[in-house]
Image (cartoon, rainbow, N blue to C red; front, top):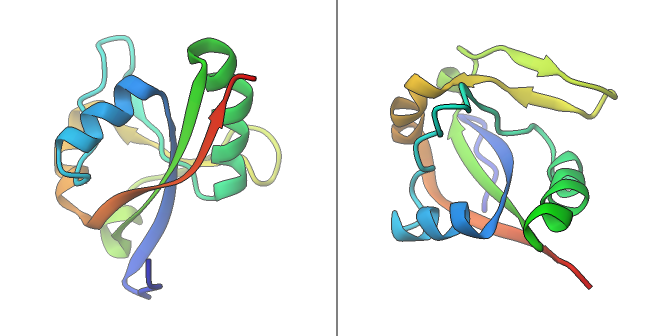
Length: 119
């Protein structure tokens, strides 16, 4: 994926079910959130996404994927960055009801950059 100053690179740890829904969209959008998930929170760095995929998704689902995608920078800037732990634990908090609009601002395709599996 080439770097574009007009784009913000984001990462998203997902399980197999979510990955399958993203693949079914042609790698263009994230599926709607579940009722108990009021926020869609892509993360700002690959290391944090890998930590979630490896430490949370693998024990719970048996597999975790790290996805990378770009969003229009001006649009991404309309959402607050939340720090939820250490310095690198930064997330973009997108209200679930705005996810369809967020998907329309994704540039290019969503890509898998890492896979973690249970031993």
